[in-house]
Image (cartoon, rainbow, N blue to C red; front, side, top):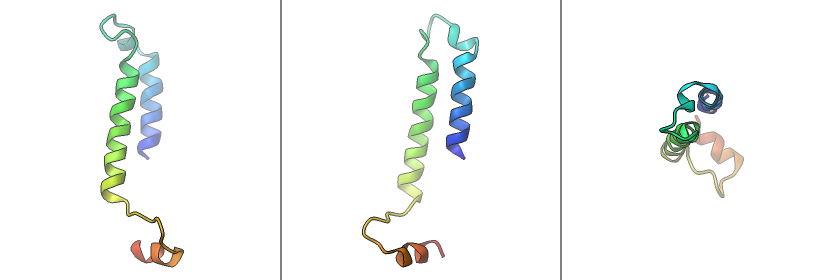
Length: 64
């Protein structure tokens, strides 16, 4: 879900008038994109379990 929000926000900001300002030099969308990616990475590392080396049954038991 966050990926969809990120993609839509990125496209909106690229086309917006805010990005046309001289102070950002066209880099505002990329800073927003990096912020979203950082939030998604923190969420993934904090809340999603590691599945490396586990069988499908073990992974299934994690989610129950």
